[in-house]
Image 1 (cartoon, rainbow, N blue to C red):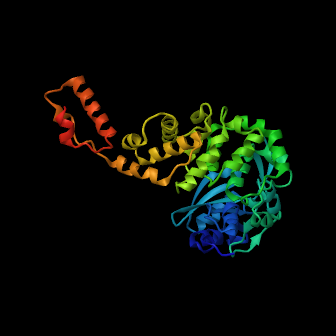
Image 2: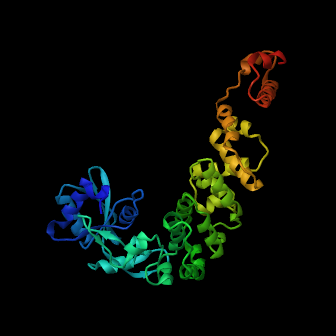
Image 3: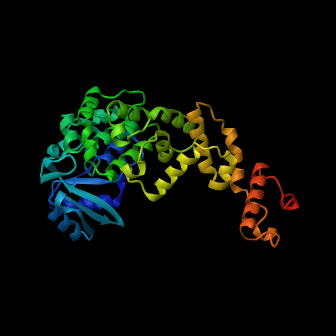
Length: 382
């Protein structure tokens, strides 16, 4: 296997430091999975049989800075060349409560693999690139199968967030057209009430990442069928998600998770997903403009072409109508239009509230003209 992170001298330097006294270290998880699938790389994570104290000593002896980011759980971040590499000691779960685990350190790579979520994430690579596959995950990875490790019920009860991760991974990595594993969905349905125990931040992080997938429609539909969607987004309805995604793709628009959330609807979404202020503002704006009667050119002028295009997609999806790319071209011009008059042009004839009202009325006329009325046209009747 060849991949850029195998040629990353900083990462290799960390590996050499940890192996200095005979320890073993591996690239693990997403970076190995993505290299096999030849998709954009995940963050580089490393796993080792060396204990955290010794990882710290070895890294510092090699001249690296060490940050104890999750020391009690075996993770330290080694900073090399200005980049941070998480190095985690092999672990096995002693107990879990569905959100967090008590772990014991291990020297057994198979035990470390068994505490992970899906087989395609339980993959390791030596610093020279040789794959180590304790649980047979390579075949699942190459066939794009999303399969819980061993007992699905047990994996889910270790961390209920794995329910949402299952749907996210299916949306991003599963073979297009492949269905969902019935045993996995049965286990998810049996344990869906565990989603209520998760923090809004963790749920929101997973849902937004799921909605960034090229086409999350099948995964969202499977969430509904398994009883998960309404637990995460009460009052939501996924009927209009597929039309929105189709229109995005037809118009070459980038996947927009806030647009897709607007299509799903639901109650108290920003709070339940603990969205950022920026995402909350965008979602609330899209919900407002997607279902009002403001003409799209006016919307582009007031809110920008991006918002106007998204509003057009929502309106077309809910109306069950096509949306021609050409119909959106005027929105770019509208977004850059500048009202050719200002308050000073109306003074001293108008003052105070009357000035504001007259300027607003002239702006309305100008917008209705398709932004064509000139300064002279507007002032002629001022």
